[in-house]
Length: 178
Ligand SMILES: Nc1nc2c(ncn2[C@@H]2O[C@H](COP(=O)(O)OP(=O)(O)OP(=O)(O)O)[C@@H](O)[C@H]2O)c(=O)[nH]1
Ligand SMILES: [Mg+2]
Image (cartoon, rainbow, N blue to C red):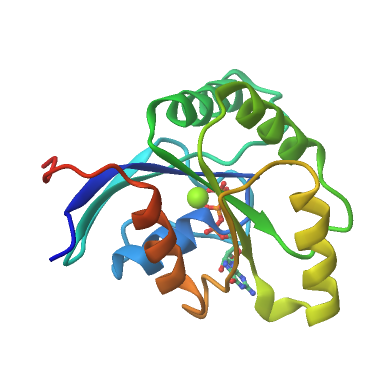
């Protein structure tokens, strides 16, 4: 029998990259609001994913963006705090990017400081060609030593099972938390 694993995971990424869509897909329920506009998620939303061999407590966070107001600064702080407190970070990027955006450069800097195990999740692959996807993968791989890189379409539930498998690999062996 496999050892049971459990732990905390947070979803980090630029606003509108599809974090809440991925959370809903992983939990198989609509727990977080999703929308085409930016800054939809305003607080950290926690959900529990119970699997046969693991329990994952996952937090969706407000998207990182250029902070202009007090509220948006507070939202970014929530996201950054979560990054420190978890076992694994899921870093979600939108694969239509031409170059690494300012917000994601900041996230990578934080990852380098905290040295958190991080899975790079490249989302919205339904919108781009294979060539484009490969370019984005290379662009990000050059910047940080990600534990794994997973291309997905959160909207179409494509690749999301692999995300669970990869998280399980990185979690510590321990009993259920909740
Ligand atoms: N085509 C496509 N659209 C997607 C995909 N995933 C998410 N979206 C769309 O992207 C938009 C933003 O999704 P959200 O899940 O709200 O993004 P978020 O990262 O939580 O955004 P904030 O909460 O503002 O940080 C929505 O219109 C989603 O339907 C995907 O895999 N493919
Ligand atoms: Mg959201």
